[in-house]
View 1: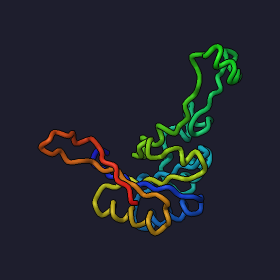
View 2: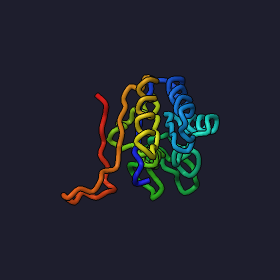
View 3: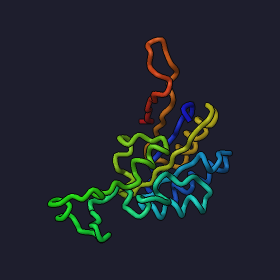
View 4: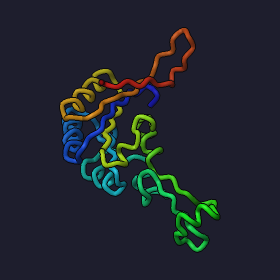
Length: 176
């Protein structure tokens, strides 16, 4: 994973993101290398199962699967029911507030959290492709470009230069 470049882009509609995934699969990418993140976890899981792509971490199972993607501020009381915002302010329990799956999903997808800027939470869709070679990197970039991604970026491993920067640090580039 440390040697992989990741190409990712934002789509405005599910049909456009679906077209991109179909084109990636048609050009030889394995479904396990393709991630899509919808604003709703349920939609992410349904899409991944239908298209045989990878389900991002936390969206399909675990404690964050039933929460909004970016989490919420509701707390569960000792009886297991929601106490609400006022209770959270006055008497925060060790169980809340809950963090959604967004951070873990983005990390697994190879997308810096700062880059996403909550665009996915606000109705956009994110497609991410893990590339194992230069050929795959350029094919993925081309597919996201021709399928009308609104913002294409990538992160790639840096080689270790004489200056001492570690090989596992990443550089982020964006098409402007």
